[in-house]
Every structure is written in C-alpha cells, then in structure tokens.
Length: 330
Image (cartoon, rainbow, N blue to C red; front, side, top):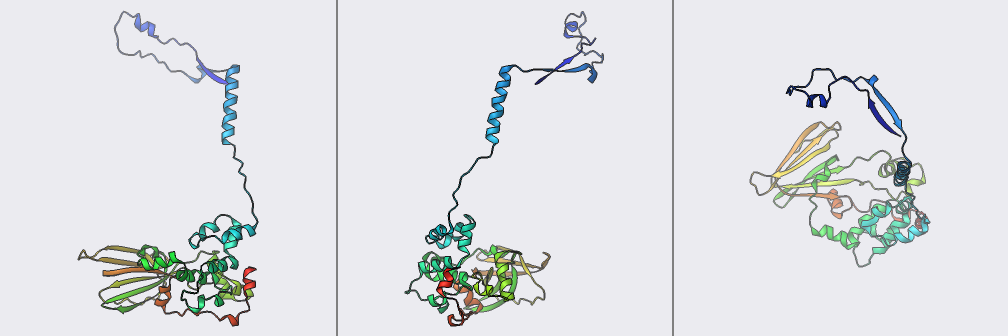
C-alpha cells in the first residue's frame, strides 16, 4: 500500500499571481501559509498487480538471503582422531586441540603424549634420566616431561635454543614476582627475576594445582598436567654495575617494563616497574647500561639450570604402579 498526501487549497497567492502582477516585488508575501494537520489528508491507494508481484519477489529474495545456511558436517569416532594425532607436529598440537571436543580429549590423554614422545625419541641423543623411556611410562607430569624432552629431541626446538637469546621481555608484564637473585658472570652482573602468571579460576592448570594439593584420591597420580613450574619464567638482566635490590614484604607484580637507549647511546636502559595486587606502583628498578636481556620459559633446559632444580624431582618407576598399558588406556 502506498500513501499519497493531499493538501486543501488555501487562499495564499500562487506563482501566477506574482507572474501577472503589475508591481515588481522581490519580497515574499507576508500572508501566512501555514498548513495544519487537519488540512492534510492521507489517502491509501492500492498498488497494481505488477508492483505486488515485484514486491513479492523482492521479499522472497531477501528472506532467502537472510535465512541461515544449513551446514553439514561429519562426526568422526575418537579412534579416527587418535590415528590422525600420530601425524601431528609438536608445534601444531594447539591447532589440533582446537578442532573440536574430541580432538581436545585426545590431547588430554596419556596415549597422545606417549605417542608424541615415541615419534621423536632417539637413542643417540643424550638426555637426563627423567626423559628416558623407562621414566616416561607414568602418567603424573607426563605432558611437561614430553615437552621438555622435545627440546633435546626435536630439531626445530633445538634450533630455537641455539639461534640466540629470547629478547621478548615484554611477555613478563602482569606476572607475579616469586623470587629474585643475582650472580657474577665474567665482568658483569646478572639479575634474575623468577615470575609466574596467575592462573584463572577453573582453568586446566588451576585444577591441576588444586588436585596436587589435595592428594585425597588416586586422580592426582594420573594427572598428566601436573607441573609445578607451569606458567613460570625467568627474566635475566645483565649489567656492568652491582645494584642493591631491597627485600619486599608483599606480593608484587610486574606492571611494566620499558627499554630505552642509555646515555652513552651504545647500550640499553631497562626500567622495571613493580606494583601490588591493586595495580599501585611500589617501586621502579632501573638498570643502566644493560648488556643483555633474556627470558627463559619453564620448558627450556637453561631454566632449570638457573633455579638449580634437579631433573629427578619425582619418584622412580619402581615406586609407581603405572605401566605402559595403563598409559594407553587413558
């Protein structure tokens, strides 16, 4: 239906009155030409058949475009995903786990991590006893052990360690400061800050940490995600001068880290801001000049060399009752 507007004729002068007038005037008439709502009539006029047909086709096409598309998918059995997982590279584990719920379940199983370890294990590579096949049959902490062993076995991961230091120091922002120490290296001083990211409530690392604290069932022995160093990093800053760092009695977090040029314009200057849990800045540590900045993650072998933790942190195989068969069943 279309709407047409009709206005009642008024006594106002028209264009013909101005055209036939004997006086030449450029001013508009002062006669009021206001139109009230009562003088406007709305009249509904029916549309013709062609318009109705055209509108009907337009509405049909619009509804067809806005209609949700039906997408077909195949629901494969989890055994198929286990077979596919045998060809997944270590750097593609996260992408594989995000495909669907079944692939995420595959990645959370001991069978997946055992198969990943067996795919790249080599007897010619020297590794600590913790990463030998005899110690990789237990489920507790299997994931972290496999990831750490790949930095001895998997060539792309080994190349990451030999290519150079990791200079992405901005990744430490927002992490909690656990402890710090310094050591003498040649003619320089290296300051180490051990940091840890806070776990979100309900996340997989948080549930694993809670499970290890309780130890009220056999489930904590089958927790493949057990890792005391999950989310930990070490920020290493090497400078020429000895700096005294005070002791703090409260929990601190890294609020910001700024890297600029030093006064000599030849080296860098690092400013490390520490804040409390409310975000209020407590102190700022300035290192100038800085020779090197490095960030070590928990999966690198250098991380455990810095904290002085032995690799053998868990009970031997004889103390556990888990066998290779139980590993493949989970």
